[in-house]
Amino acid sequence: MINRKVIIENIKTVFYALVIAIIIRSLLIQPFYIPSSSMEPTMLVGDRLFVTKYSYGYSKHSFPFSPPIFKVRLFLQTPERGDVVVFKTTRDNRTDFIKRLIGLPGDKIQFIDGDVYINNNQIPKSIVSKSNLIYCGNQVKVNTFQEILPNGKTNKAV
Image 1 (cartoon, helix red, strand yellow):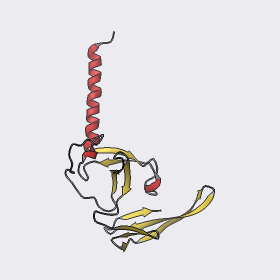
Image 2 (image 1 turned 120 degrees about the vertical axis):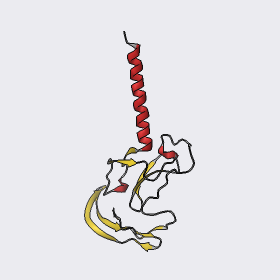
Image 3 (image 1 turned 60 degrees about the horizontal axis):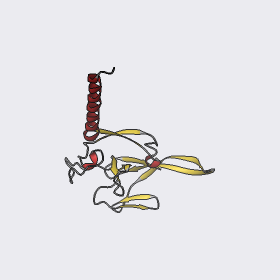
Image 4 (image 1 turned 45 degrees about the vertical axis):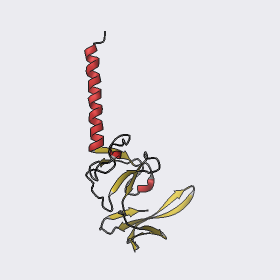
């Protein structure tokens, strides 16, 4: 015969573990994985990273299911160029994007002939490596560049 007290204690333990996990994931850190090759060569498909939730403040998206608790961001801090940021798309409000930030609010970002321009100033870049990749049976030459952002942070790009 199953002891009713043991079952209740197990349910309490699972409940408390879930509450603690939700608090940690909502207020402190959240794990993510890199789903695509857009961050290569510095982050590869399948890499995992932990994101601190308090770095730029809290919004409704800091919590599971994005409940409309408040409309403004609390404890707002501005990110810097070169930071890796995670954000949700405006299209479905569910898909997470993980990208390196190169522009700040008000900046004009342009890509002209493979070069990045921020506010009409070309971002300097230098070739770090050259390699050949086999893609669909064809050999493709790929260069890896290092870009220097206006605040001095470097960014590797293919």
